[in-house]
Image (cartoon, rainbow, N blue to C red; front, side):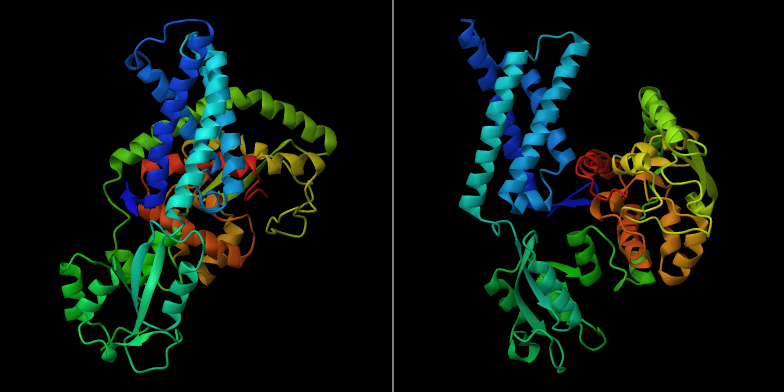
Length: 461
C-alpha cells in the first residue's frame, strides 16, 4: 500500500487509477478527432486540447471515486464494476454539460461528450478485463510472514482469505511451545536462521501476532530483518492499515499514545476545514431551500406536528448542542423515552421514510454546520441519553468527541446502518481511525463517496 496524506491506498488502485487517467485522455482525443472527421474539420495539434482533455478526465475520475468504482467490491466483481462505471460516466457527462453551459464555452460539444462517454466506457471496461486477466487478483498482494500461531494469527488468516485483501500470508511461525491454532505453523526452533528464511520466501512484510510478547519477542532477528529491508509491523497497526479502522479488541492506551496519528499540526487543516464548512453550508442552504420548504409542507400535510424538530446531541469536547432536521417520525415516536432508530422504523411516516432514505431530512443540518457546531465530515453526533451508556460499555468512546461531529463521516461510508451497542462499537472503530488519521484529503474522499451511499442507500436509515 501507498500512504498518501496518512491514508493507505492499495497499489492495485493506484495503478488502475493511473491507467484510467491515460485512457480517459485518449477517449477525449478520440472523440474530438471522430467529430472533426465528420464535419471535415482539421483537428489541430493535440497540445491545443490537453487542458480540456484533462478536465474531462478529472471530472470522470471524480465521479468514479464518488460512486465507488475503486472500492473493494468493484475490484473483485466485473459486473459490479461495470454497473458503477456506467453510473459514474453518466454523472460525469451530465456535470460537464452543466459546466460548459454555465461557462458558455466550446470545450465540450454535445457530440464529443456523447462519443467520449461511449469510448470511455469501452476503454475502461477493457482495461479492467486486461488487468484482471493478465495480472490476476493477487498480482499486487504483499507477501506477509506472521510471527505467531494463536488467535491473532487466525484473525490475520481470515482477513487474508477475503477476496479484496491486499496481502497474502506465506507462512506462520509459532514462537512458543503452546498448541497452535494455526496448524500449519512452523515452530521457531525448526528454523535455524530466521532472516534467511524470510529472504528465501520473498517476504515483503513481517507481522507480529504474538498473544504474549514476554520472552517471545525475537528482537535480534527482527532487527536483522528490518535492516535487510523487510517491513516489520505490529498487529494493531497492521489491522488499522488493512481495514481502515482501529481494532478495539487489541489496542491499548500505550499504542494510541505512541503510534502515529492525532497530530498536533492541524491548525492549518482546521482553518481550511472551517472555511470549507462555511462556504459549502451557505451554498447548500441557498440551493436546497426549495427542497427543504417543499418537504416541510409535505411533512405538515401528512401528520400533525412541526415540520422540523430539534434534538440534543453531544458534540466537540462533550458539549451538547441542538441539531435541526426535517421531522420523519410521528410526534409521539418517543412518548416512552429515547429509543434507537432502526432500519424500516415503524415510527416513521410515509414521507419520513422517503426523506430518510435519500437523506433529505439531513439538509437543515447545514445550518448547524454554518454556526460551527458541526462539520460536514466527522463522527455522527449521538444523543446524551445514549452517550453515557456507550462510554461505560465501550473503551475510548469519549475520544471520538475530540473532533467536531459531522453530517457524513468515515463510519457512515464504510459501515451499514445499525442501532445497537454492537453497531456503535464497530462505528467507533472507524471514528477513531478518522480522528487519528484526519487530513483534508480524507475529508475529500468521504465527501465524494457519500454520493455512493446516497445513490445506493448504503447505510440509509
